[in-house]
Length: 501
Image (cartoon, rainbow, N blue to C red; front, side, top):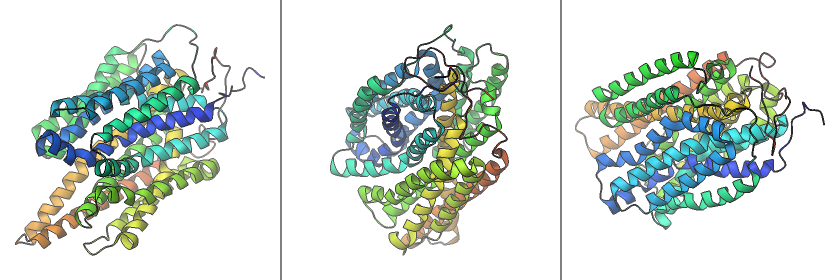
């Protein structure tokens, strides 16, 4: 075998299964608990005002620690970081499931977010450095991208079943079951690298700056959702985030051991991929939140019926992800496929703007959900694969963390912005149709959902133009189907070294 030939990990498909389990656990946890909130509130006796903190505690810890978590996997080793993330996430989930007070539940959710911030980027980094054969790499990223896109919908489905047929606490306990299986599999199938050369150092100032910036950004948007955009606290945190981000960039330019080398995000293809994932995160929020509202308030669906309603979206997303990564991306590249997916997703959202109080699921909701699923399945795998392509192996963890950070920030923006726009639209509708009878309030709710959908259409349209402009044509940059292997460092089970472009 040539010294420059990529070494193939022997259990790579079992590695993919293990990574997929971990990724599913982290992604679905952003929505699976939402359906359980009313039951948890009745059981633990906390107020409506406090309820948002069950969600916010997770997103704050997860979003603010992602880059640190990704870099830790580079420093202490992927396998070790992966298992630590799994065990910690499972322990935090068990603590939350056994919660006897509001404070205990919030603390457990924050711990889940912290360990999720280690687990999510490490899972993608393992995948990035395990699959060395281009065609297999595409297939693996198709599976990972499908999970990343469909995890929220799967969470709604699973949350409905667990809450209705078991108990709200099982929305947390289920993670323990998944994590135990994943830990056993990781012990056998996740590759282990023998480090060569000196141990790299952690950029402590950079870590503090970017973690503070991400915390302020996520908190600012979360506060805007609950207190409104006229809240000084919201704008104070958002302004702080801006200052800290600028300071972080300036520090990274001079740091000896930068947390996030700027070449990772300034690469045109990777920058396009990160922005596409962020925009898709904003748009998908409109689907999950407002379609859930519509199904439960207008059509009076139960939690499990609501979850099952998203199943066609999941199936179409998985189908599109496999077609995209195995056929279309190798042929057309992300410059065609990502804008195509954005346009398709926007078209599906336009279908949802036609909903009214007399609409039915089969005729009016199902077509839109299936079209959106196909669009997301065209966006996510190509974007995620491009986002980690061409990154030196020693920075694969932090580059992978940028994928999760983009999705998390997109979700936070979508939560605050679309919720606020929808609420404003409902208030204006009622003011224009006084007296505010029950029928007027119901129509106002439908009008508010339409407003959110149209804004999401705008985001996807902007994403189509932006990704079409930013992604390089095939042959201009790193190809998704070709990578230049280099001589491998000492390996226990091989990972792929990918050169920096």
